[in-house]
Length: 140
Image (cartoon, rainbow, N blue to C red; front, side, top):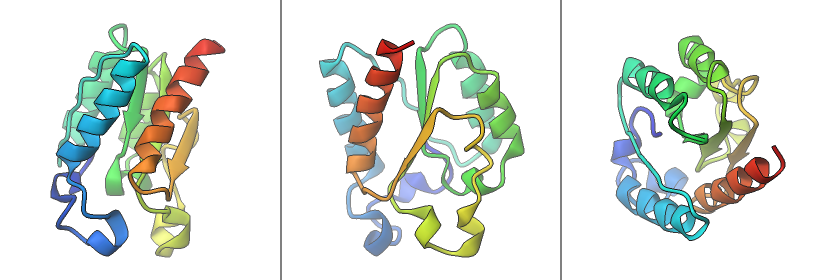
């Protein structure tokens, strides 16, 4: 799942987020997931409620959620509550390193309800997320 403004990847602040588009990230992620036997359903929305509804819909139908919530990471207690009720693996992903950026980005409302966070590795963050999901599912 991809949160607000991620539909602008490739053109929005490429010095921070890189030049790859969201479609390119999703295609690579899907390819890596398929190689490990997973299928991917992707949703990007600029609306918090859409992401919450997607988390609710994933319960019982998905084994994992990989989420780049964008700025909602730092403000959405509602999304955190929804993720907290999801019974599968949850991995938070960021292209940039929020801890090395503006102070408001140092707080993640999601950190307490996800299995882990991968941040700061650019496109590789998504690749590492696929690996994390596979390993976490293997040990559960």
